[in-house]
Image 1: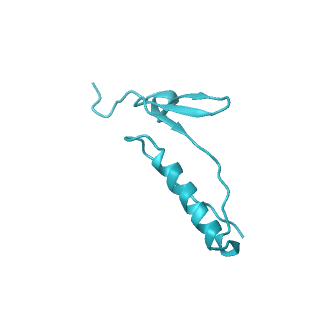
Image 2: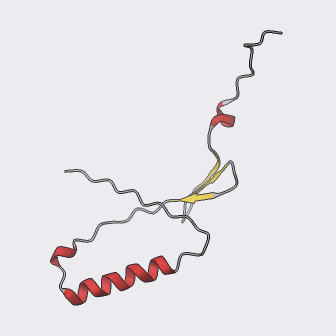
Length: 82
C-alpha cells in the first residue's frame, strides 16, 4: 500500500459547522455541538451625550452583559469604514 495515499474528506467533513437555521434568530450548529448566533449592533456616539445620558447608557450596557448566562462565550467584532 502506498504510504502517501490518503482518503480525501468531503467538503462537508472539512467545514466547522453542521447546519444553518434561518428564522427570527438565525444561528449555526457547529460540528462540536455548540451554537453560534450573531447580532448586528450599531454604535452610539457618546461624545454628544451629557453625564446623565452616559450613566444611563452605562447602566443599560452593564445590565445586558450581566444578563448573559454563566458559561456563555461572547465575541465582539468591530468593523469600521471611512
